[in-house]
Amino acid sequence: MAELIKVPKVIGTGSAQYLSVADIPFVVPVFEIVDIIKKVNVTSCKVINGKVIINGELNKNIIYKTRENEEVFDNVTRVCGDVVHCTVNIPFALFIEVPGAIEGDDCHIEDAFVEGEQDIEQDFNPDGTFNCIHEKTVLRVDVKVTRTEQICVETSTDCFLTEQ
Image 1 (spheres, one colour):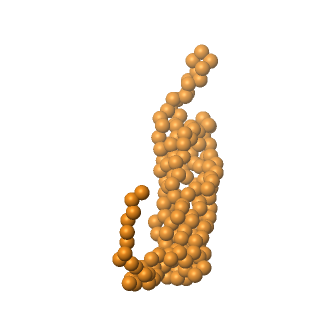
Image 2 (cartoon, rainbow, N blue to C red; image 1 turned 60 degrees about the horizontal axis):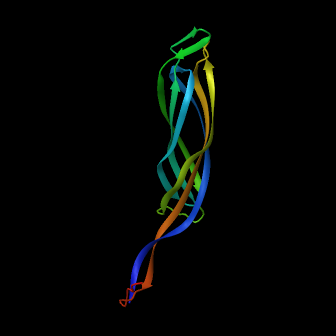
Image 3 (cartoon, one colour; image 1 turned 180 degrees about the horizontal axis):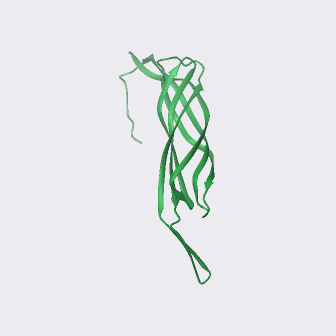
């Protein structure tokens, strides 16, 4: 007996990089950056002839210390302030070539991540704090394109399970 089933067929895969460049101003001057948590979010993926168009955003959560006051006691310098955060979403768009892809195929994001970054402190104040960072981040997106196809398979009703 034969049955007609639908299965996804891989048409192709591809990767692309995107260089995100942005100035990120802070509301409160920064004494020291504690951590930067980065996440790449793909918001849309559209297959066109031979290419995939990707839209997304780079989410950066910047955790930093402020400088409220500085005092010296018995040759010990004490700097006090708050730990705060600044979260930014930086949009990006790119395309990835996938030969054989056509409009109507399905797009699958295999991976989207930060490959590397450089954050440069800028706009310094007399007390050593700064008001802005110039960020350069390399994003990488890996994509797979599939197309649903129908295939005919032979089936058998003679199935036996054996215990081992």
